[in-house]
Image (tube, helix red, strand yellow):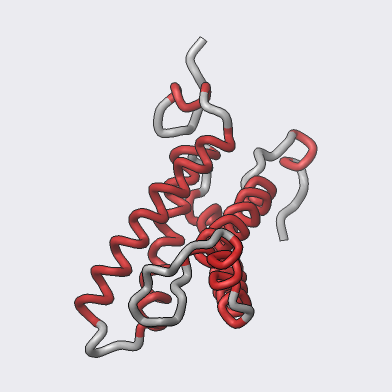
Length: 166
C-alpha cells in the first residue's frame, strides 16, 4: 500500500515528530542567523537594526512554515490558508522573544548565570553578552511554537470536516 505521507520524504514518518520539529527549527534558525547578519552588513548604514531584524524575521516565518510542512506536519491541501493560519504564531513568537529578551537583559540574567557558573564573558563591549539570554529565549519560544503549532496544524478529524468555516 503506498504511503499517504505529505512530508518531503516518506522516510521522515519514521522519525518522531519532536525530532523533526527540532530539525526544522535548527535549519530555520541557522538560515535566520546567516540572513540577518548578511542583511545587517549590507543595510546597517541605511536602516535601523530593528527594521532589518523585522524584515528578515518576516521572511523567515514564511521559510519556517515551509520547513514545518515539509519536515513535520505534511503539506496542507490549501498552502496559503495554512501559511496564514501559522503567521500569527510566528508573529506572537517574535513578540514573546523580544519581550523575554528585554526582560532577561534588564534583570542581568547573563551576568547572574556567568557568576553562578564562575564564567567570564567573552563580550568585548562590556555589557556581559547575551549567550544565556539567547538560549533561554530560544527554549521558551521553541516550546511555545511546538505546542501552538501542533494545535494549529493538527490533522482534522471526520467530525471537524463537516463543520462550516467562518
